[in-house]
Image (tube, rainbow, N blue to C red):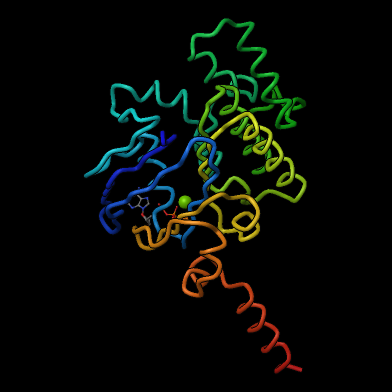
Length: 251
Ligand SMILES: Nc1ncnc2c1ncn2[C@@H]1O[C@H](COP(=O)(O)OP(=O)(O)OP(=O)(O)O)[C@@H](O)[C@H]1O
Ligand SMILES: [Mg+2]
């Protein structure tokens, strides 16, 4: 089966951290979560897939083509990357200009650029902000604009690094609906989350990273039936019991 993304034996080293021998596939049309504790290497893995960091060993394939410095631009037309922190992504003077940056770089006509920007900002509900400087937005608004910049490129794969973090419930709902609509058009999606709701309700498959290694890759149901994995993903039941017990002891 053709993979949208195939991570093949990737290793990478920072001074005090390493990703070790990562194998991971995202199938065409699949929605896959990468979960794991803070510092387990999720963002590092995404940066390697996007060619922002170079692996020490191994390769990344996008639709069976190996990603290398020569074809990075082509690859980034297929793969949209939402950074964990939108401030790392937005840099043009205004919201409209920022969203236009990617489509302009595709060499589209100004008419087509305008059509795409207006559509993308409408999709994320940010049309009222077109002239706003990008550094004068709330976190959730900035995240929406960053997503608009990505979907305006019409990628076929989305990599979303904690797309829901810091969003209020209405924005979570909007963001989930936006992504769901895009998915119905056939997108493949790889995302990180610390939120069990999305693991249970929003994934076809999931991989668990722990200290730079993949310790599980399979269905969310299988992961959530393993006590060890639940401890890594977030043992909310245990936390609830502890809090209740300590509050009962106080009274
Ligand atoms: N630029 C860097 N230089 C050196 N070490 C780094 C750098 N960026 C990240 N690290 C280290 O690499 C490890 C993995 O970081 P990474 O950002 O990939 O984790 P993460 O799983 O995305 O965590 P989080 O859930 O907090 O987003 C961490 O120990 C971090 O301190
Ligand atoms: Mg991260």
